[in-house]
Image (cartoon, rainbow, N blue to C red; front, side):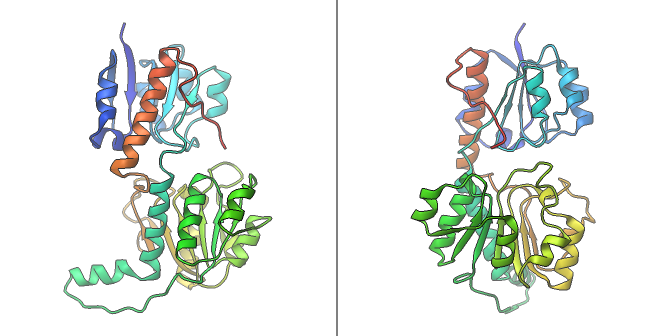
Length: 321
């Protein structure tokens, strides 16, 4: 019986590159779906596959239970694991593989793109120009503004490098502090997230979603921020409480929110952030470049192939950190 693989990530499927040839070179039966898939759809499919080559699909305890005993491995295209019940997969001896180190440059560039859009009001002025209106709005420089980074991992570090290039002082909080990197790039260490929120003019979120970080940006934490602060989110939409962010944007307490992620994707037409003032929303494309997709797809596919072939030294076992 051929090995059956469920492939759900759309950027993998939609972007040309050598990952397609690599996958097709294997004696796999590949079934393609347009993810991210909710639990309901995953439950319909579960039980018929030896492997998942997945994106942000809901791989819950129920999905894993229904997938057994056939499911042998979950190969995640990307880094974030919050949609996968990692503890339960581990308890059932189902390895979860992922692709760290493949998209940090792309996401950092996107983060700065959101910042420049907000600071220079580019969405407003460019949209007006396309409608025949020559609107001249006064924006702000980012030079001299303090960049506060919550989560100084691979992506956070790349954001810090770009911030220093824009002559922005950088402060950061991360429980796993890289002293050498911080010294090299003149980054001030903060002892807590709250210290970052109080001091920064721009706050960029680069942490995983878990029970400790869900709704970390909410009314109470927003109240600690400087008036007019800009918040950037290229991590997970659930890090930010939507209702509290909308209220802060409407009141002017938050000067701008640039996000590549929402708490519901795709969002309903009436999602409040889509019409909130000074809010720039992109459609979860922070890591979706031709270069990054190829790196992620090749790593995810190689992880899958190497695990199934028994090449235990040549795949990356996922963890939360």
